[in-house]
Every structure is written in C-alpha cells, then in structure tokens.
Length: 114
Image (cartoon, rainbow, N blue to C red; front, top):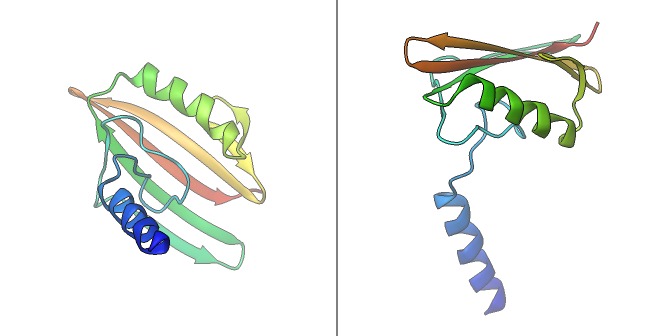
C-alpha cells in the first residue's frame, strides 16, 4: 500500500510539477516563468562529443536571469570560465542573452571542450 501511495505521489508530482528544464539539457532549470522555444532545439552527436543548442524566452529581466544562472550552474558542476562560458567534464556551455522587443531570449549551447 505504501508503495502504491508513493507511486501516485511521484507520478502526479512529476506530471504537474512547475519546475522544468531547458529542452535537451537534463539538469539546467528554466528561470521562473520563461518557456522553451520548442523550435530551437538542435542536437548533434559526434565522435568528439555532443553539440546542443536550445533557447528559452520570457518577460523576465535579463539581469535577473543572468544572476540566476551564475548562481545555479556552479551547483550543477559547471565551472565558470567567464561570465557566459562554463566548463564541466569534457564540455563547454555557452549562454547568450538577448533582448527582443519585450522578451528576454537566452540561448544555451553545449560543445566539446577544446
């Protein structure tokens, strides 16, 4: 009975959870009310590593989003090389921030570390 209750709790929590992640990135959370740009996901696997790019968009202040990722990414194992580039294992994560009319757009890109 406990297992069944745990299963239902886990399933509904997973199904209706407000927390979500950037498309293609298993552990990079989306900031507040921003949304994945569903058409932006690009993924290539090569013998040298993976190339991955995905975008999120929303009405949040760009500086707030930047501060969030500067704080969160080191907790996920990413080591900051500079304000927009992080390294982890054999990969490099680059984050580019743009303002488009009233929207903030963030592009996350992973490539092999050279």
